[in-house]
Length: 119
Image 1 (cartoon, rainbow, N blue to C red):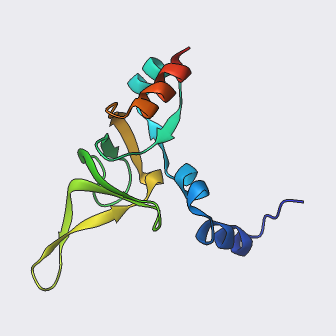
Image 2 (image 1 turned 45 degrees about the horizontal axis):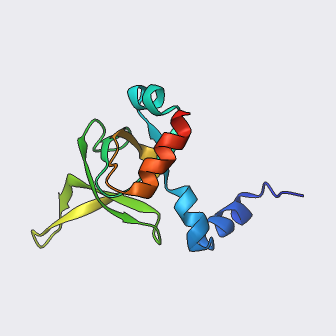
């Protein structure tokens, strides 16, 4: 039996091993990419160009600078805020709040995933 208790769902999310956390880093693709690739979502990687869909920075477009699987967050360039000390820091974003507009195909494994999905 699968549980529907929110507390147990949160527990599973926070205690998930790294190989499952990688799957949780999936992000929706833009409509043009969906047609090109034939998939609805892909795992986000450094170098992908993304558009922020929700939150304070909605509408901002930028490249992914870092993907933190342990914290389940993504960092995008030009998405920064000032601290009280005056130092600028990058704002962490949840994968559910971003959309991939252009994918980075430098990695041969990722290229194989895209080619496999196109068939």
